[in-house]
Structures are given as structure tokens and as C-alpha cells.
Image (cartoon, rainbow, N blue to C red):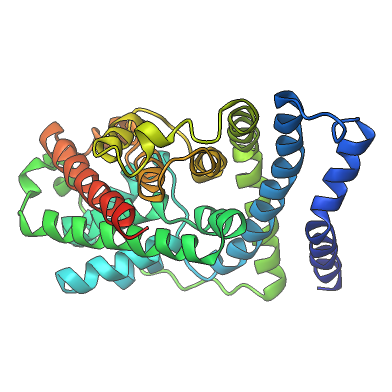
Length: 333
């Protein structure tokens, strides 16, 4: 415990002085006396990469501890025999705290359907888990402030809950591959393994080792792209086709975002620069949501359990929800 306390204290000391540290490095490199586009790009990169990586490491460690209190079986049990709308709400909220990636979409889907959880509730979970994960929330909070982070969480939950609800009301079970329903449940009740707090801290360390090792390159690439745009793209360059005045900006950003594949850690630094260069908040959030929540690789994986009509309906309903949210926030902000 004392070692964890020392590490967390050290984290806060470095993080709170990160701007000064990065300025010192830039000064040694002779960048502070240069006002070129190249200098601005490098300064942005030197400051943002450690900032994002430090935020990611801390929150993944803390959420690794939180996740040790959950398991796929517990999540599934919580959702069983819930009414449709209540199930959609609960599934969407649980999606924030439950480990999820595209490769786990199929076994999660099968496990939920096998347990008798309605299709719409299952899809609410599959929408919320990648879109509103803790990495997205904490990075948004660190880079943009609590207001933008709360906007993102509330709109993401809104999309996940209503999309799953409408899909459930449409009774689309016929578009699920028949073999999924033919699987006979072989689950047995297993006593919950008791873990002491030391074991939960080890879960936090394991989560950092697993997740950070997988996403650090996305962060470096994302910040790298963002730093180039920060230094070389004129301040109002994107206002013309990603600003509020361009009515087609929101749907176009969603269409452009779907084929791209990135996680929150990789796309948020790019969104930061989009906003800086004149993109409106609603358009930028719509782009981010489509990249994270409607990735093409996930659609390919889900094709194993869903017929193509269901995938188009799923993407269509979620896409419309994202577009509505984009227009709404462009209107408000």
C-alpha cells in the first residue's frame, strides 16, 4: 500500500509540473526561441504525449481495481430478467465499467443471448462499452475539462440506451444467426472467488501492463498527427467544412469516421486539434463517436453472429443517433 501511495504522489508531482518540464526540454532544444511551424508542432508533441500517457496510466490502474469487483458472469446476471427499458439503461451504464474490445464482441454477444438477455439490451451494452469507456472519459476531462467530458458521457449513454431500445422494439431476432440460439447453456453456478485488496491492486497493475502496452502507439500516432495539424494547419482552416455553418459537416464526419479504426486514446488528441482549428464541438464529437462506436472491424467480427441486415440496421440507428447529437450540440454551442 505504501508503495502505491508513493507512486501516486510521484504521479501528481510530475503531472502538475509537466508544463514546466516540457518547457524546460524545449528550451534546452532551442525551440522556445523559434516561432516556426515545426517548433510549434514539436512543443505540442513533447507536452501532450506524456500528459495523455500519464492520464491513461492512472485511470487504467484505478479502473483495473474497480473491474476486479466485476466479472462477465456478474454483468450477465445483473442484466437477466430486466424489463426492456430498464435493461437498456443498466446495460449502458455497465458498459462503461466492463472490459470490452472488438475481439470480445462475439463471445459477449453469445453469452448474453444464451442467458436470455433481450437483443436490444445486449446491443445497448455493445454500443456503450467501446464508446463511453473510462479512457475516453478521463482523457476528455484532462484535455477539455469536466463539461465536455460530461457532455460526451451523457450523449453516449443517450445513444446506447435509445438505440438498444428501438432495436428491441423492432423484434429483429430473425436477423441473428440461428446457431446462436441453438447453443445450450452449460453454465454452472461457481462460488465467487474472494480477492483481498492486495489482489485488486495487482489487477490494477495487470490492467496497466495489458492496456497501456496495446494503446501507447495509438497515442503517439494520434498526438503526432495532432501536432502536425497544430503547427501547420491555419487556425480557422476547418471552420469552412467542419464548422456550424456547414450543414453537411456532421453526417459527413460520421461517414468518414466509420471506416477508420482507432480507440479513444488515439482519436482524442486529433479531436483536440480539430476543435482548435475551427471545427465545431458537435461535429468533432460526432466524428469521434463514429470512429470509436461504429468501427468497420467490429462490424466484420459481428458478422459471425448477426446477419447483414441486422448490421446495417444497427449501424443505421446508432449513426442517426450520433448525427442528431452532433446537430444538437452545434445548435447549443
